[in-house]
Image (cartoon, rainbow, N blue to C red; front, side, top):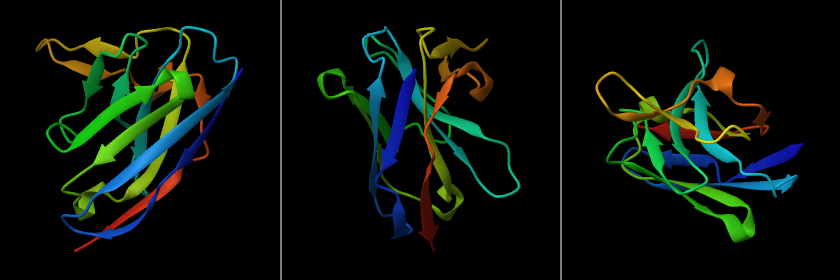
Length: 133
């Protein structure tokens, strides 16, 4: 079992930045990978970014060039630096982990994207991000 807790959500104006953190506890000795997902009201949960145990990163198109995922395995912590935030980024952001590394998958266009939410076993409770115009 892996427990996940997110930190760092909040309210910012358009163009602003936020840094989310996710701390893992429990069976963190396993070779797990993890990622960030988000869900806006009335929308399906979607992948934002993922990072594999070896540090390989995967991004959704909406995150490329604006968001950066990173990890500190010694601290069992994953981060999501979000820059140039837009109102369309408003959502509940979730941290998720899985022991089936990697957490990314290659699309037909050879881009590396986060695996779908249904592939992830462990989830945090979420942290709200609100971006106002």
